[in-house]
Length: 254
Image (cartoon, rainbow, N blue to C red; front, side, top):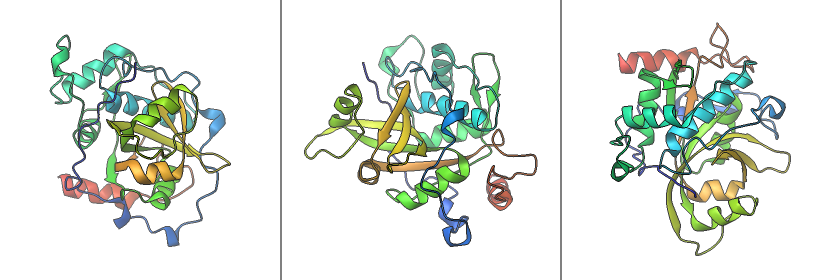
């Protein structure tokens, strides 16, 4: 069974937009292959998204696993029960035990929850993000820069029915005309391989995605600056200073 669970995008909500802070012309070129493939966790787990519309919560857990692994640490463990607890506690309207309230999550709302409260892992530890900033919808060049700098980004898509069929057949997600829309879905994009396909995590495993697919079906995107990935000096693994972005966010939300 494949559940989705992303509520409609609200493009007017984000207080920060990544384009205002990162100028690609002033940064080194983004490499063709992005991601430390050898460090990625081997067991992502579905994390309840085969039974509930918690793709945003499950995706956030997968992003956290990736960021910790990227920093050289053992990835935290997440269970179905902690995913559903955050699904309930973030304000989505979901109530554990009442399936009629399983209506999905707003990406912007959950980003704020991750920043203020943090998501819960199976050991009881919470993992916060420090900043979140919106991406331009359909801008694959900016997406590449964000994945390169931040390790992963969260993408909202209006998932076509064909993508579910392609997933079952272990095929890359590509555009199929007249497929129809299954609904809103949240996917962490974590890298790009040598043939130019993007790699995302969904329903417990890695999924290849063509750039055209993302460009056509993406309806929102979020870059997350997490101190769990940065050095003590707030530098990315590539040595980029992102202090200005962090300080501006602190002023805006004060």
